[in-house]
Length: 527
Image (cartoon, rainbow, N blue to C red; front, side, top):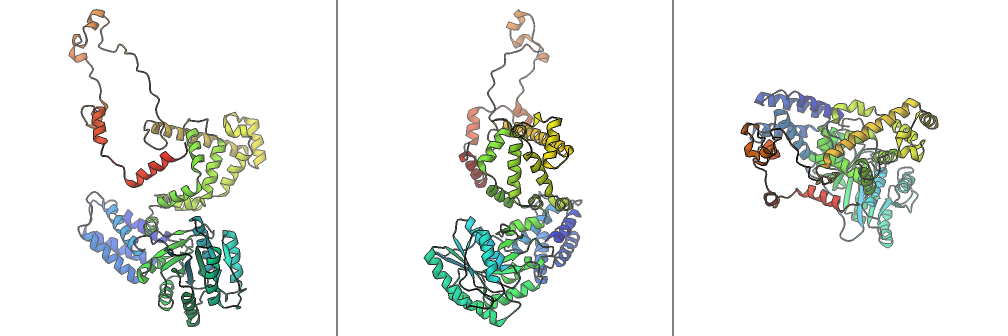
């Protein structure tokens, strides 16, 4: 959605790379380009004016870091201002002190509330909660049936006492759902209300009555990120007529400019709490302003990528594969490769995963042209092999490869390509693991075996005469004596420190909390 804005900002930053310092004229020109980029992305005019004013004030002030070049300085300031526009910090969902927690969804018709109710229910279920979906949209045709289908796909129960299609009282349904949730021990109730075609006073009153009946812990305004500037006007109307606590953005995977979505949090003063970026029920997560700003600036979203990997990859299975790859237990084979490839696929489309990696903005076209069917072909080739062939691909001769190609519906060239790429990748990872092996403190590093002390050899400058050799180094001319090389000299550290000195120097050293937590988890994990 933010591809156009990302491209324009990248062009602005590129023009600054050749400059050694920023003049006032440079800052004015850069601010003008950024202003045009934001306006073209459909960002609210008032938000753009405030953004540019803050940017110029900080760029001309004393906030510039001397260690950064002009391009890095502007990127840092733009990143911080984007985070401020998007809400500043992540706003977590509030839960009632006494269950059930009631979440009411409101918004325009067609904004995706019903589907989002299922996504939110699945997300809460993954957080360890027991959610209940309530079909309080009794006006739109088949809205109740749609919620039941979505709930079944998400594995979340649905409370639907009325058939809908204009039949039933939505206020009574919402009120009854709370009693039902308490009796069945559901700890979260998600109320799906009727959507509005516009600013409808009657339906606004209905939403207000439902809010009074259920006294929700959170009221979430669901807005389609593609509707443009009208999103801000609609949000203002709902804020005055019903009131809400947070915003949920849907359809962030669309091809609209999406700048209005950036404006809502700043204009309305309500945080964006969740975002939906796909049609799948799992394409939904909490909204993080800093991560979204990082994506817009083309710097990727590593934290989200790590979180998805932690949810998808089996820690014990991954540990065993790493040990095989580094030569600890057996040999890394195509079975292990297939398991890891399937785990990556469960994280989502490859284009979306690669898009979260830093620096991939310049390869946008290549990423969008990735053929997901290629992975299906690779999987078919591997599954057409026997267990022995997958465990040891070195036994694949010409006749075996021909058989595999026929069994997988591919060509021998495809089989050869897969096997060759597998061997190259395995070799590269083993070399990387070997380099890390000398650093036993690093995750994945191997403990180096202790070697026996080598016998002293007769080198240059050592006399072959036993009498001279017994006299020691003093008998050797000074010009021929070779001083013992100290690795510390290469780093300007002088004499080699003793073990006691090292222990004393490292005694007060502490890792950052996040890094220490990662090492603790690594040490407590399966071995």
